[in-house]
Image 1 (tube, protein in one colour):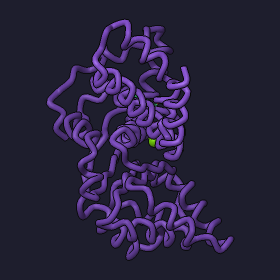
Image 2 (cartoon, helix red, strand yellow):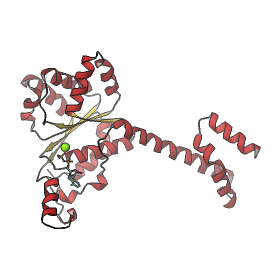
Image 3 (cartoon, helix red, strand yellow):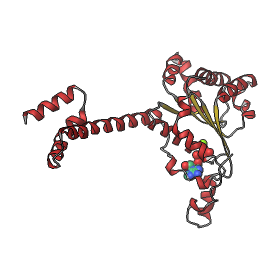
Image 4 (spheres, protein in one colour):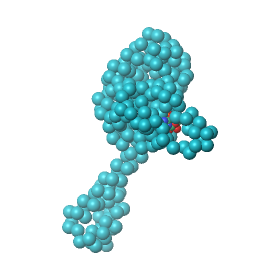
Length: 265
Ligand code: ADP
Ligand code: MG
């Protein structure tokens, strides 16, 4: 008994809370199964490592500030037959983040860009990357506000810690001149150092509509697309199709949509 208490105390001192918590349970199991000492220790340390990984993932997901949790599992690729599925699965592996490349998901509203941007962000968190999600408009507002409060460099430093910055919905709201400049500054500072994932409904040629200055738009697109995975999304809005199905009284079963094709777009 005294030994148990001492082991727990040492485990706490060594910052092994799960070892301390699970000690008796695992010891009992090991005794019952007549396990050698090494197996007992292995089981106990495994619990510590698993719990630590789970805690880290939870923290990363919290810090990423996803508006909702979407995953690849809940994305129905058969409903988007023209989407380059192998490319999405490759992006989920995260090597592009390791290589400090960018990604742009581009296409019509409702085609699953935000869903996949979040899902890729979640996949990156699982690969232990630090991820931060913003809508483009929210980030620009945050930058403008920070600038007004003389806290811009602090925010820029915070953002720089994230290996993947997700900018959702670029194109719906045009930015003010200073807002566009600040956004440009963020993308330019990450060039070849940190990854950016943008979702947009606008062709690159139309980005001037949101950025204002043509010169800055060219410079932004140039940096963003230099080392970049560009994934086109096409077809009708998933939301629209779902509501059509409901209106027609059909059961909502996306698996019955168009069959999966080679998905090269
Ligand atoms: P976009 O960002 O392209 O406008 P969203 O990703 O917001 O589109 O998709 C709209 C809604 O439809 C979301 O709730 C999303 O989860 C869902 N959705 C879109 N495409 C699919 C799909 N292929 N499988 C499952 N859900 C989808
Ligand atoms: Mg979207």
